[in-house]
Amino acid sequence: MSTLPPIRLTVPLRLSAFVDADNISVTHAQTILDLARRHGAPDLLRAYGNVGLLPDWDKVPGFQFIHSGSGKNATDMLMCIDAMERALSEQCEAVLLVSSDQDFTHLATRLRGYGLTVIGAGEAKTLERFRAACSEFHVITSAPPCSAKIPQPKAEIAKPIVGDIVSDLDQKIRNVIRSNCKDANGLEVRILSTRMFRDHGVKLSKIPVKNWRAYLSKYPELYTLDPKGPNAKVRYRPEAFRNAPA
Image 1 (cartoon, rainbow, N blue to C red):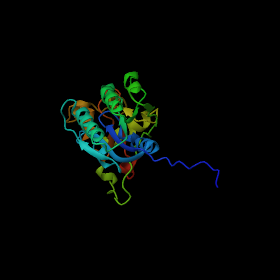
Image 2 (image 1 turned 90 degrees about the horizontal axis):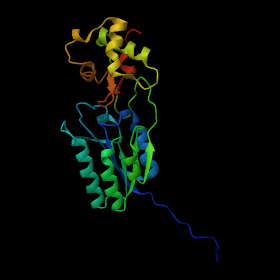
Image 3 (image 1 turned 180 degrees about the horizontal axis):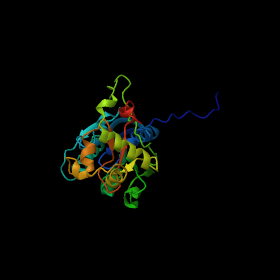
Image 4 (image 1 turned 90 degrees about the vertical axis):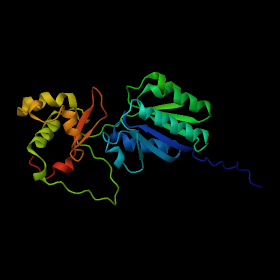
């Protein structure tokens, strides 16, 4: 008769992930995916936000992007509805909530009350109130490069952008981002105006847009932007400028 102890197989928890894309940059997508796989068997990965402002989130493989529109707190409400629906229908055993917004404290508390494991994730600025409401919390610290590279499906071949399509203005913006990026995380949008005038004599008043963010948002094939905020940053896409003058 064998005296070996019985083998206990650990079955990974069914996990659903909900990402506040209005609050979390797309450059953290791979980190979030790795975190989900480390804590369970993710069968639902959703990112929520305004697709008009966050086109890159809609392109990330593995994530389903849910357009929440432009209404106030629309993203928060949709995330709460979907998370509670999954919990009450017993479609998951663990939930990954990704946001730096403490408003999700009540959601985390209620989900834990239903017996679910709640993994929280957000940037270092996330307040302790939300962190403490989760079963465990992870700080997202991955530092993306100045020139963001968004993962694309292998079967999809992006159309090349030749140098003559990139305007002289965009080349100047690229140069300003490249020369002033110090923390490997892009250039703050609020700084762009002063740098463009200092380095190239370009004034916003000479451009038919209300602000630099509005201009950058018009060209998602050239730039990636953080969600709106006082320290939001912009990065340029190197593949879009590969044929442009250095």
